[in-house]
Length: 297
Image 1 (cartoon, one colour):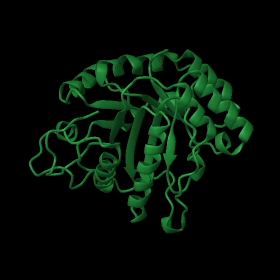
Image 2 (tube, one colour; image 1 turned 90 degrees about the horizontal axis):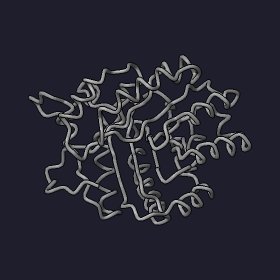
Image 3 (cartoon, rainbow, N blue to C red; image 1 turned 30 degrees about the vertical axis):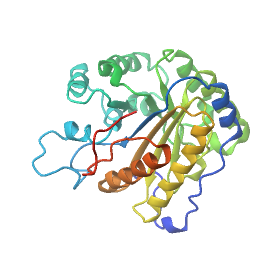
């Protein structure tokens, strides 16, 4: 994942900004009796990216991956609309507590730019539905040049999105975050439609650390820099998420990326270990021989 990559990550201030005041308001307004739900995973499961993660002789990568992690950020669906049968196969070979968080295709977000994409969207949703209860939040990632000039296209898309089907949106054009009036209107749009606002923690785009949640879901895409500071950054996230939990946060969806993905499982294991200690949870730590009977949230 090259997005936000910098040559000298050691000079970046990775401090997590203060939580947006409206995040605290949203969490307070949406307090309910639900149990805390935590899903942590990588973006891919293929052996070529996660070198060294799979034991010698592993025959099915997804089957092994899904027994180490409780979710996957399914980036593969950005590049193609897999047939319903493929999703059914993925459903059949993963444990009951596993979830997929698929990305809507580039035909929708980058080529059609949300306009006249209804049939394609419906096709994706129909195929995703074969994941049944293992379908997590679907997410829409817009092109970096998708600016607030296209606000109406985004609004129309979100208004037409099926109610009750979880969606998260990631805008990348800087104006969505650097112009306070645009930000206010954009965040309110997401909040009005109960759509999650994706947080992206990457070195070269600190403006995307807006810390503004628009519903009771923290959908976080963490991009390591293949640098020793990656671990300190993850420790800071554990601390901040604990604070948000105390303020009422009920859903944590955290996905670890790296420019060189082979280190993603190591970072994720470190994050889960510290999360378990802070939250008193028992999420499975990938490739950890100390794992016993695991209670997955």
